[in-house]
Image 1 (cartoon, helix red, strand yellow):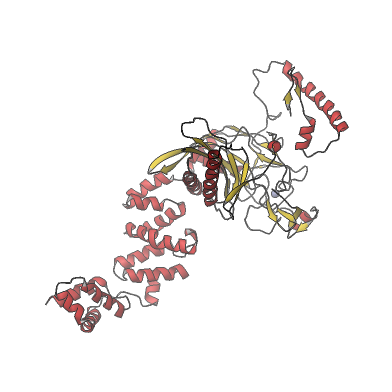
Image 2: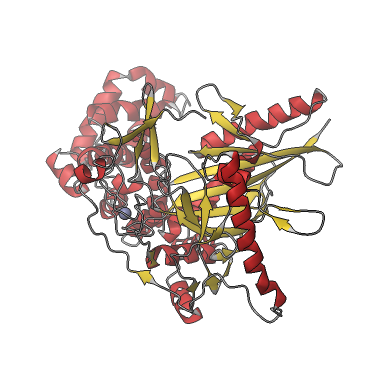
Length: 474
Length: 102
Ligand SMILES: [Zn+2]
């Protein structure tokens, strides 16, 4: 039996405001437990929340980026539940009047664009963090109250890969807008996933299960793969899917039922009496809109025309805003943008993935990369040396011209020196010379290699080849 | 807060259920007491239904105030020691609570 899979995502994104959503506490990550807290985010009786304007602006920007309708009238509500991560026993969130309605994100499926519809984006407060000790649990409220944007999608994705691609596309849009760091290790982006399957031909959706608090895109992918297989197995065995919340265990690679009682989730939403509604002035909204960054697709088209790059290059470069910024920083200073693009797509990305660091942490500055390309182009150094200089700059930073000088890496283009190396290589390898003269043109490569070795990689390769061919001609 | 509608279309509050949601443990006589009181409140509020409200927008707040916002500026919170004075128990700078089992 073939099944159709329907996946919907609720993505929680921590906004990168300096202060929390309803109080002035610091949002910085990694502080000692319970040091970024105050009466408001600890839920002391009588403490009054006040909305952070910047968090509202960021939420509205996210909506604009995906084409949501921005609400002129929004309000906050209380969602009641009891859990040790929530000191007030209710979370301030938005129930029926979110800041953004509708919208869509495009992903590529088998080379064709597919639209994933977004239901809404609302703003809420993050909760505290629980630690588990032997015999007890700990609560750290530093995270409680950090502005959390929730992006709710329609069940439009039909495979774990599509869910993964949607998350990647969202991250790209959000980091372009600079409203979140989207750092998965620091929990900036987490998601709840719901998923159902139904036999082909059936129109109504099957019973869905929910997987909560997946803290990485990979976790979402694997959890969905497992859950879809599990649901198929249940149906094939003649069973029924139970609507429930299941937990993904990243260690065993399984989901398991949380056995939460049926009626436990009755949140009793009601309007937050301590917060007045937000009525957005459309003039202000338009002012915010004018601060929107270039969308990735628009930037890609511009990079293609402005720098004369192939579409493939431009696609790789705009995949992340910081990477595109880096490329443009170097390309603007260079006569050879294509060479810059080659360096970024190969050496730079390889180094970043080897070291597992971000482009913003790279010690090779865009200006240094453009200078490195110039040194190759004016034949001061050859490609082999350039890679060596790049490696040195990755370790210590610095200017390529200075490094070349300091380490004596400049390419040898002196006729006399090269002449001597070439003659020595021919004298030491008479067989290769014979082979070449006998018609084996590839033999010249071996001799070039010998000269490069003798010159410690510094000989100008074009000159070496030219001279070798000259000398072996007659 | 209305939980069910009985056969006569009268809305009733299930006090025991609501108490359970709020983690309040009531004995039978308390349930009876609060059931009566809550129903009295609902009856009182229902008088609104006697008015023609077709032209009135649903209201979440009684006062016409909006956009009480603050700028995104950090200020120090409470001293850690002061915060932990309110903790029944402490472990590694955290509030220690009974083990959370899911
Ligand atoms: Zn606070």
